[in-house]
Amino acid sequence: MAAQGNPGMANKGPSYGLSREVQSKIDKKYDPDLEERLVEWIMAQCGSGVGRPEPGKLGFQAWLKDGCVLSELINSLYSSDKPIKKIQGSPMAFKQMEQVSQFLNAAERYGVTKTDMFQTVDLWEGKDMAAVQRTLMALGSLAVTKEDGTYRGDPNWFFKKAQENRRDFSDDQLKEGKNVIGLQMGSNRGASQAGMTGYGRPRQIIN
Image 1 (cartoon, rainbow, N blue to C red):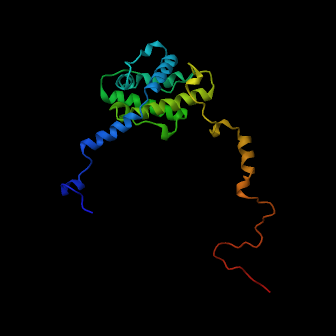
Image 2: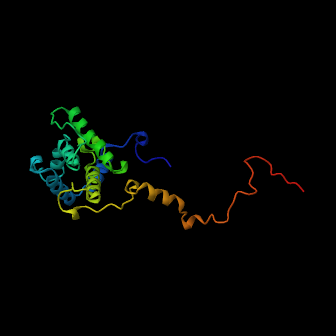
Image 3: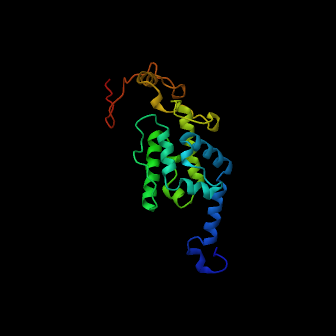
């Protein structure tokens, strides 16, 4: 069926009104209560040196945008051998973005999954601050779960992650696991390869 109204409109990309609507839907996922909890945690984790942002999404964005607070945060989760060697505030956009991406790389090495990661522009241009919150929540959950003595703040601020991380098992446990066949896979008891032939080879039937 032909589009009503201006026939040329159908081929154009989304109008400003539409992208604005999409943006406001993304913004609705931004959680002010979560912002408060994350600010409390970052300040507890890094100390008062990081300052306190203006309340609200724009304040939160401005606080994290140059990557310095984020870098301090990920460094504070290591007792030694900090992942980010150089934390330097800069008025230059590319330097700030570089600092943010250093944080993202370090967070991924720490264990935050790719699906929980924000993109540098999400923070830098304020495109998706809810994604930034999601990354920080994932980081907090990991920090609480690891229980390695580096987490500061109230442990109830974050959910403990299920210990799905294979690195938490010893090699012996992993080997043990390989010998167990789940019941849903059926049993291999009594099975053998007798009578099997190679692929594509006729079975020899000899009377």
